[in-house]
Image: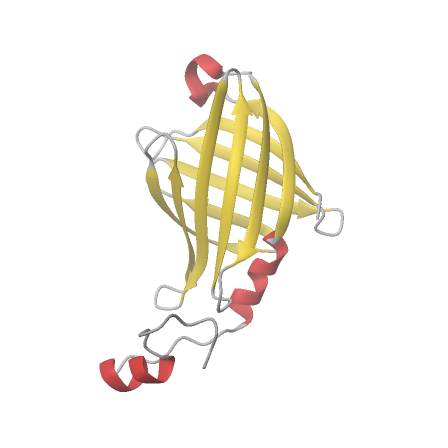
Length: 169
């Protein structure tokens, strides 16, 4: 018995045979996500799009880890700024049908967002309807520079926050 499966859960073979849909397969698209795995500590500043908190210093801790099966990453994060605490959970994976990466974000302020994006030359970009993020890696993938932007109309983008994260393990 596969210990990663729950009782009564269908196997990939069951899904393939039952639905006619090809079972997902791990590939290089999933391996590219490995660059995120670990714990990251970040410091930075909030931008004008953060309204009354603009220019506030921010600190954050994010922990990325593989979900069982190796298809998706989970990230739990906590950011502190001013007197605020923002907690979030993100799930990142590769959407084979769209040939794009997807990131689902849920936070303690009640937001649930979906972003699509990809990676090119070590720079990851994800965009949603009102927010987008660019994450670039440096120092042998031990540093991540993170730039979030926000837009009310999808055309004009304003800085939301800039963070520099260091992998702590």
